[in-house]
Length: 330
Length: 304
Image (cartoon, rainbow over all chains, first blue to last red; front, side):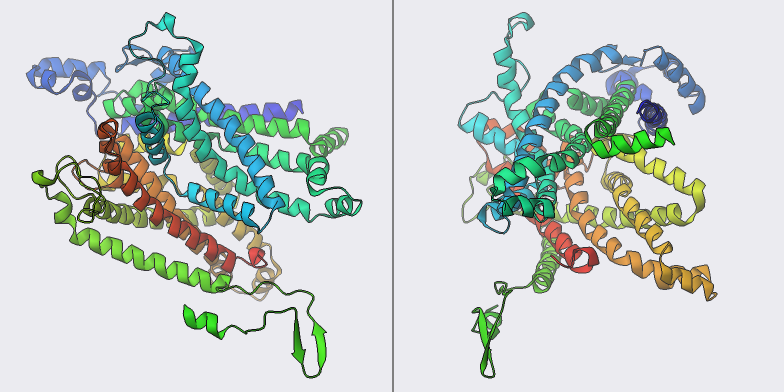
């Protein structure tokens, strides 16, 4: 167990390192002139040639890529990811604040979509080829083709503009001092983005669970349980649930990448000040340091999810536990 | 298809007369108007026709999509303007169709490139020895580790926005899943007895690749390509919506939806609803076509 975790951790670190190289390389070959992007069009035109050269040197235009990367890596290892130009603060600070907002959103969506998708998948399998199954399947197929941001827009029109149940955006009410914001306010602002993200996330897990549950329902164990007189629901609960929960859990951990991507879009629609919105601002505004920081964090988030899934699998599934014990004895 | 229904045998009862004795049929599935094969063909044909129609009308309507008419601005959907008009009096139906045709073009190019990349890298991983395999598997893990949207933002930042920027970005981000699949298929095929026999018979590696490996992975590649296409369109729209894709002057669904955000609180819901529905219809059709094709081609799923 410990050896497996250690092995996964090493892989995690090497992958994060590789992501930082890729991200750094990609922002470096950008055609966007750092001087022009950072001082603005008007200031750039009014600037003297000497001043431009000075700034170009400051942004490291002349230095080779590897030297700059080494520089960046050196300070990154000490916890300094540089300064964000758009937010005028250290990248780590910007990310910390934004991550708290995004994490709340993603966690809610992750849990709701997982539980709901799992339940829908089992219901669909239990009613295979009858109307509940058709309804759930159709819903999932349709949802898989729906752009997240469009659904967010429709929810915004219906729930915020027409019905007025939810605010139009942001994570806190406008014009209220940060200290006066209650938890209820925050939840009120979180509800619509979280709902959008949850609804979109259901499709994958529901379809997957449905397939697995159909297999389980046709297994000998289930047939015997039903022959003994147990109801379908009871048999599924006692004999199917553990078998079904494991792959579903793995899938849900693997879907973190998609939830992260979805949150970027949803945050943009609802002006929700999370990581995704910061990534868009950084990308559009030429904020290189912040963009690299967010890329690395998002990758760490995704790899971390997969890592956790692998470790949890070992803890929950007795077959893997036993196989490992055997390996250790051998 | 009325003739189809008519040609169906009238007796779908649970027994048939054959000669004199009555044969009970234990397994009599409900007769379906369209079986899976026909359904797939129909969906594929409709999808391709729609694709051609969208691209053609989109090209033809390019002028109409840009045309402004300030006497007819901010109109709700009516018979004259089925999708309504925007704040500059542009017809939203024309704009949506023109936007879709751009999306389809980006989608086709990106999905095609992506599938070729997946085939090359997947094959290289499976056949290129241990080192190549490790390197490519690592690359796949790496690409799957960064969320697609973040990677697209990075790539768009690196090579610039515009038509080619998006196409390259989407092509570069969508190959890993298919490459992994192709690698697994080829590894499986390589171990199979018919390849071993061919090798013993002295067939050259090139002949084995062309005669055995390629036909083996071709169905997966085809299905992968069809399924990549709707994905590519969705990601193009998403990245354009965020402001990293196509330029604002080009008609695109992402642009239309992102511009509509400023007018939603004024109650102009049609600006967002219909263009999005048009996009969903296109994506949905191709997604279904791809999935049906997979059920049809893939021997593991032929029992469904």
